[in-house]
Length: 150
Length: 409
Image 1 (tube, one colour):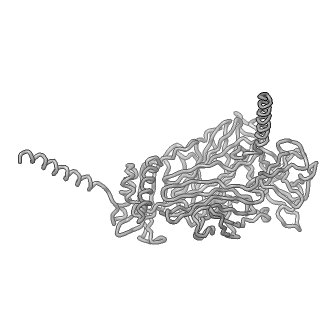
Image 2 (cartoon, each protein chain N blue to C red):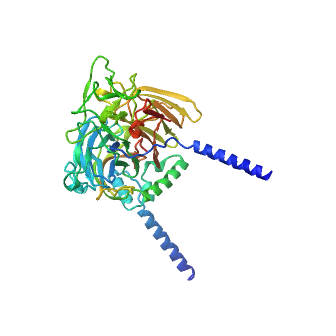
């Protein structure tokens, strides 16, 4: 029994440790303001694997598409334009824009991408209408492309 | 016997070498420098545009004119460059229907007073309409508007605005479109041996056109606008501070006859496009697969095409798209805006149920542009293919013949 005690203690500590870490993993919630803040905080910290879980693409029914998009999203984000800061400026009325999306006016502060010619000194400030959609009671970020929304 | 075989082999090698020489190309025109250029820009919905202007080993005063998607001139400014200098412009948006302009790396001769630096501001703020996709679009024209560097400390001098003059090919311009999480870059369209047409800020159908189909080239009255009953005199879009690119200046000019530039107007009348395709056909690759979320947009820019002188060359688009098995769908005629992003499929260009292929179109107005393809995790830009390019070789050979203009390919 004496021999088993350290093993049991170790199992107990491990269980406690993993339950603590899993509670630190952020996920989308029904609170839009908190979800937006968490999402951009993760992006700011370069925690792209967690940030992926906030994207609407992450709950795509097609598993192959979802996995493929996840891999490329994370890889591209790692080498992409770094987010330095953000500020939520205004949260729109729920479901007030096309196909039930909700806009969040956001101010992003980023660097510039690596380009083959000189870029400006100083950070880039973007003020944009971000789109979010509530699905099964949780808010997901709608990625905005030049041709469509994802 | 061996000697005969060797000689025969040598002869075969010589003959095939000669064929290799005959197979040398006529041209490979891409991304040449010029004296004037045009860049597309877009801002808003997370997008900004960086435009970077590079001078060769001479100084430059670059007159820059900002246009919105309906072709309205919003603003103009002069940028000053020392030899081998580099200056940049930022176009972004921080409010609905407005764009901000800044410059950067602008220190030559004290820098321009027309724009403020990006890191100090404030920006020049302009109203411009946002499209349904939330993106504000337009173009900027650039003209090297000086011919000399005889000002104080070698500053640019001898401004060509309002005069019939030709500028050297000493600029190249690059554009980067930057979203909140991605970027792509492309070169601006550049005009070689750009000629500013007309004296006293006017382009006159009675004075500014020439017939190059005979030798010597001869001045002609030319019905450029298609208004057969009148002699039209068009006010130039040049500003007092510098030259801009007029609609008529998107066509080939004769820069050698009688010491001044003219717009070529051969019997017909036939005009030759410096910008765009002569015949006037273009092709572009599209990919649209709803199953994987791939979408493509055609970005078209038809500079100055709402000017009164552009009546003969409408922006009516006729599209014939092919899938990869050669099956055809048609779309149009459709009138598009001066700057427009047109999607493939859905409410845009009809491509049927196909997911990829080639889309070829005709438009009379001189245009440039590209296609932009993206899905959730990928984005890329592809150039348009021009089906014909017209070149005035007499401007280079300085010899006036009955065949000054050649058409490629």
